[in-house]
Image 1 (tube, rainbow, N blue to C red):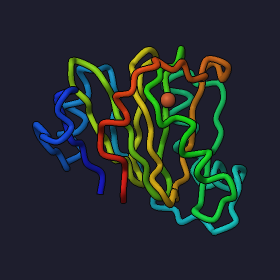
Image 2: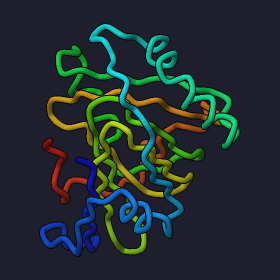
Image 3: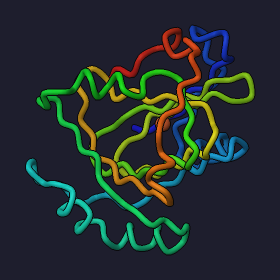
Image 4: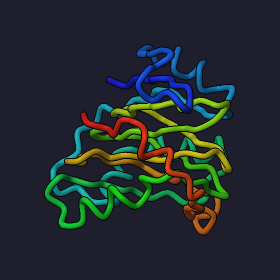
Amino acid sequence: MSHLTVYKEHHPAEPLGVFTEPEDIGRELAPLGVRFERVDASIALPDGAGQDEVLAAYQHVVDAEKKAHGYNTVDVVRIQPDAHNVEQARQKFLSEHTHAEDESRIMVEGSGCFYLHAQDKVFQVVCTRGDLIRVPEGLKHWFDMGPAPRFAAIRFFIRPDGWVGHFTGETIAERFPKYAP
Ligand SMILES: [Fe+2]
């Protein structure tokens, strides 16, 4: 189940609060400029389904998002535990970074965990199927897909070249609980 755990940035062992209702998660994240909503993502994806099949299955959602928010490019990242590069993929965004473009995703299978660092706090957001999250440009964050990742996410871009990780060099991610679904 999707949930949000809020910590003071220096106290990863003592959560300030936990939120499990999507409306509550959205409300807590809104002041950060983060958009969190639920969308209908009930279409099951066959094991071998690739990007084109995932986008076709969710074309109604994709078209609505593109139209509403001006996204030009859409793709799909799908990772399953038996992928040969799982650990490498996990490490890629496991340290704190920012982007010069919003990080906008709809989780359509499995789960993954965003950690958002703002207002002297860390907001740990476990995203599951049906969650839409947009992390605004410049917001410090990291992402953990867990030790045996299984997720598929539709990614929206205005400028795909803007979505490059700028790493802050901070080690804060190492001090917070890893995602262990
Ligand atoms: Fe990111």
